[in-house]
Length: 154
Image 1 (tube, rainbow, N blue to C red):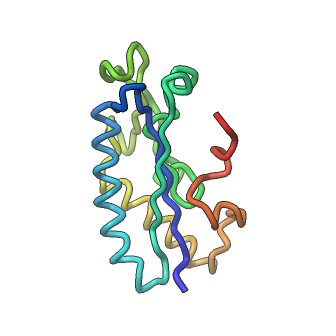
Image 2: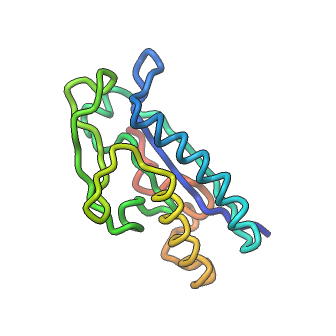
């Protein structure tokens, strides 16, 4: 029986249905990473399951760092990577707000690249396998891609 490796991603989508280049690039990286992870993790009985969420302009304005955020197995990608979250000016879709960045090993990423997603997912998978699925995730997090921090209405 395949166990899910939940991957959850959220980003700003404007009222016109547009998102910024950073989020678009991250989404493409996520799709490539999930394809690779399916092949790599299948022999380990793990299946990556990607769930996405659109956040409104109002939610984005209240918390710009919530856009372009990825969780794997209920933990933010920056936790798996030991990364720092920052921000920088983005583009017209994001207005006057600064968008989320990640700093890993002195390098700053505006979009989350495929290799960082893969690295975080493999660390998460190793913990799941190494502890027979008991990595401190609730049953709800095991059953859904959405981390418990994001289950309340926004």
